[in-house]
Length: 420
Image 1 (cartoon, rainbow, N blue to C red):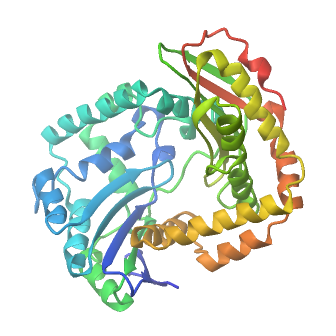
Image 2 (cartoon, rainbow, N blue to C red; image 1 turned 180 degrees about the horizontal axis):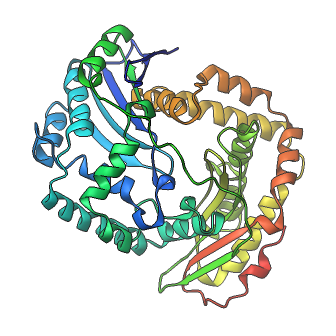
Image 3 (cartoon, rainbow, N blue to C red; image 1 turned 90 degrees about the vertical axis):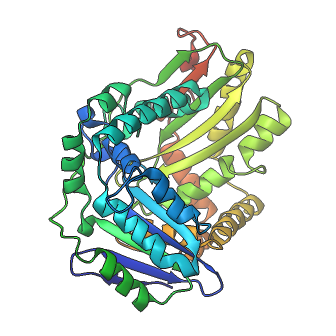
């Protein structure tokens, strides 16, 4: 299914053969993200990720980096999350060496030119402004603050305008030196290439990356009580809401049970939320639920946009569907949810980018890679009793959190509705 080699400097290389594809995808996972940051340096991981695209000594401009990959029809991008940062590239198989060279060059030889830093600082501030101007994104940001109050998990990954303006070049170089280490990095590659030739190429490109012991500490999350409702009044056509409650960590033995509960609740057009809130009641155009798993915490979130005058009706209807999860799930509905879950996973594995992300992300975050067949077996074994028991355990009134962004008075008695 996959092969793994650890280089002398601690860099882990994992490959998954896909002999049927003509594409190769490279993912480089770095074990750092926004939860590793202090409040004063909030957004520094994201800032660094942006600057790695600004230029290296070999390719001094952002255009030269993008042209190198786009000039052969490839895709290059990156992303910062709460617990990891990923740089990735997808190209045709003949251009694997070029893609690896570009990614290695960005990670090891970015210039951090002072002028580029100031330009990118403004770009990130505009990114923050754009997110704040989007009521749906704003509701998502605010719910994190209620789920993880006073903790890095509750902050915006991009940081705040104030923190971004205060981050210096030296602070970024120091942070990168402590966090971007070969021992906290995983390179995962999927495509029609042999493991041995990939390891040889990576050893040539990154084997001399001298590392120290990475600073892997982060602030553990301890559950605490806090504010349950946050309303941000805005003159918008819809009221955007996020209704959430704490979930399960990435290592929790029942996290796949929660994932299946979420599919029943709000994934797809045949889910309970879509069927009830959109199809039957006509309260929303878009409604969905999603689950997040972190190293020591997690969440379940429902997101919807509704007509402001029907906000309370919508919240009550959503809560009714949440409460129904504590009742037994019928065998046909359980079977449908399992097949949807398994089918979506199998469809993802058609793509080399998804496969490289699958193996690399698991290795970095958990140190254990479950195969697709492993996960299919886990899903098949989940029972209706397990779903009901977990729902009864997690769905408690005092765990509910709600954010609303829209034309709603800040003193609206919405907290009174948070009952199951």
